Image 1 (tube, rainbow, N blue to C red):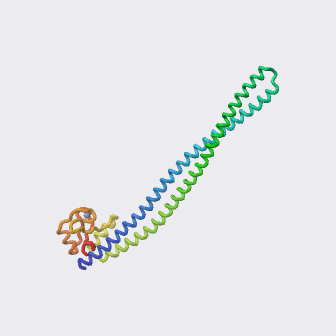
Image 2 (cartoon, rainbow, N blue to C red):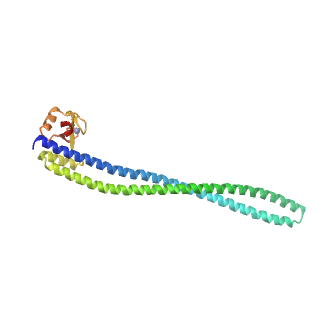
Image 3 (cartoon, helix red, strand yellow):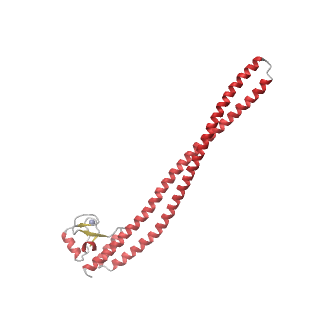
Length: 239
Ligand SMILES: [Zn+2]
């Protein structure tokens, strides 16, 4: 096998690993999307819980005002009846005064109840909107989750196929190249680094000694002293 053929196969393996990087990135993006949607959902859930609690408080306020208004109005009713059968002028005046006070109180309570009910109504509309937003966020999260699992399954399969292809390709290389690649792939790394501008390693950007570059061009299996990857002459550079 001549140096040109070695270089060609190394380029193909490098392409396969670039593809694997892309595929891994695709999975990361899908996973990130789930995280983002989960954060949105959590916020919506917190807001919903908060607004449900404040809505409940408004309901209690309105109920209490209604009860109090009811109580005052029943008292007022009773005193009006008593007024009709008052036995003395003093009792009459006293009842009259009490009725005036109760009427003022009743009017105030009526106003307050109207405000409370209007607040409750506003809160109900807002709560419905928040509930809708929460449901939308829940759906968005579920969709992202489903998409992630689909993407992950599909992409992992494609990564596996691409790895197999690169393994087959490296079987065609001289033994020394093949065993270095096999070792580096086992570490989970991309095994190859192109030589850039006839000067430095395309993976870690360290400068390379001229004799190393020369030997690689002649087909030797040499690794970058800095990052340990197997060096190759990229077709873009040689063409
Ligand atoms: Zn390097």
